[in-house]
Length: 116
Length: 112
Image 1 (cartoon, rainbow over the protein chains, first blue to last red):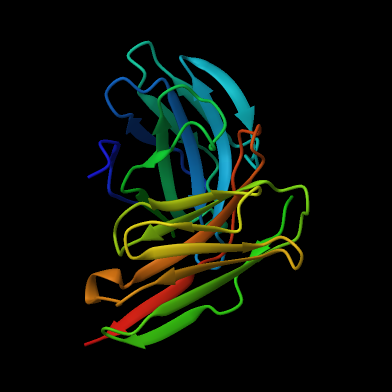
Image 2: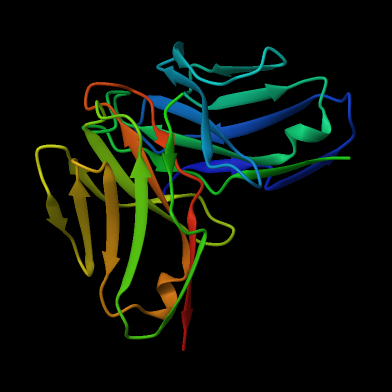
C-alpha cells in the first residue's frame, strides 16, 4: 500500500458527460501528479501540483482540468467525455515536488474510467 | 515527447529462472531511469533506479543495467517468483527535470 488513495475505483459514464476523480496524497506529501494510462500506451503525464499551485503540465487536454486543495487532496475533472478518454487514471504523490531523481513518486491504485 | 520503448510486450519464465526485461530509449540527454512494477489492479510501484553516471545497480533480487552507447536499459530479476508476475515499465527522466516518460510496459508471467 503506497499510502495514496484514489476514488472512485471504477467509473462508467456516457460520452459528453463530466466526471471528477479524487486523490489523497501520502501524509506529508505536498505534490500530486496525474497520469493517464490507455490500453495501448504507457503512462502519460498530465499535470503536477505542488502545495496548491500548478507546477507543470504534460499532455493534458483542454477538456481536462485539475486542482489541489488546501488540505492537499487533488481532483481531476474530465468534461465532454469521449470514447477515447476511457483509461486508467493514476495519481502519484511525492514529498517535495522535486525531480524524480531525488523525490520518489508513489502511485495510487488508479481509477478506471469507461466512457460508453 | 520522448520515446521510451520496450523490445517485447510479453515475457514468460519458469519459476526459479532469471528474467531479463529490456527497454530502449531515444534521447541521449536522458540521465535518470527508473523501473516500475505494476501488478494487476494496482498502481506502479518503484523497483529500482539508475543514474547515467552508472552502468549497473543492484537491489534485492533485481539488477538494472544501463548501456548508454546503444541507449539500452535492462532489468534482471533473479530467481523469478510467482509474485513477480506483473507489468514492468521503464521510465526516463532528466536528473533535474520533473517529468517522466514511460514505455508501454512488458508483461511478465511466471510459470509455476
